[in-house]
Length: 376
Length: 125
Image (cartoon, rainbow over all chains, first blue to last red):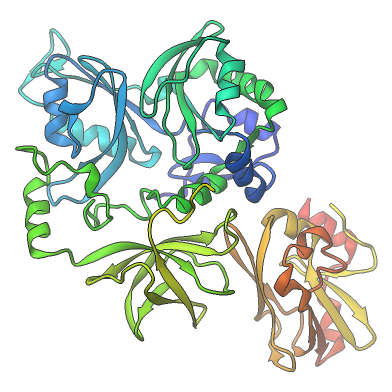
């Protein structure tokens, strides 16, 4: 990932006004925190928080063959995706390595929205474009019945997450409007702006992700902050986004997921439909599954007092090096260190002990089940 | 930012208070504001000797671990154990209860290179 961050979202000026601390992330200048990661994290767990996710990419695939084609390049089963619904899925390379993890929404029978990671927009688009079916038809701008567009610059995106989302939703869209069901997506008007509202998120809390024309971003952002004010809303940065997702053991692309890893070793086989007759990486995954995986992503918590675990710290098992952390932090909700690491198989089971090396000293940790944080 | 007039400052945002032939050291208000949410402090070892500009402690926020450097060569005479159970003292009272350690410098003249409050204010803009 390059530190030469030059891109800004349409909310950059709003972040500066709020005195956010800005950092480079995947080529973008993004707010890591406004005031305190702890405070922002707890606002999402206990009230509601709003995140600028305009850096994420929006690709649109449409046409009579779009669904059938996507089913050959993505791991989850597109055929089972009903109109107005989204699911988590992977884009794999020929070696079954993860190019990206994304949410695919079927917004019309023959029209799909792919919400992809910021640092992967160009790679994803290029991969998908070069794998379109058939030959280009200049007359219709399609390939074999599929039109693919990168609409990332046209969309702003916000994640509004936390237990008070229901109240905020009513305050924004009016009485009688109902939140879409879990994983569903629908359009709602906020003043003159039509918003795609999806009941999805990356925090483990109830919440929505909204996508809408970039020019409207400051107005929508400020209206959400204003209407959420009495509910205790906080603008939240990438810092809280990371601690929230890690408590839920949601993987972060570029850290826990990369072309060096496949979804099975990441423990995300649920989003890979090996019963589909054909998709990129299928044969390799089937072979790996039969031969046995060489490593697995495990989740753990530190046992007793220790410095916070962090990415790249080494993990030992029975005195032998077994792998390294891909994610680690102090959990603001639980107040102890948590993390994820790829370990050699047979990987340890929940309840088993490992050691994390921090500045030359080994600290005990316990393998845990996902998620690390459960709502009480 | 609070920059007390009676302290000395390092380039790396530690403050130094002369107390006879000892110095008390912590991190500045500016540094704690940049780090935010200190969640762990690895203290120096009492009676251990440290080199000037060597890592003597580690202050960790949610996001990152930051090394703290010794302002002069010397021996640690005391550490602030209160930070073990309450690392956030560095955020709430960086120049008071948030102090990190006391050091006996080998050569008191080594402190002459440190910045005064005015120079540190200029440095942090």
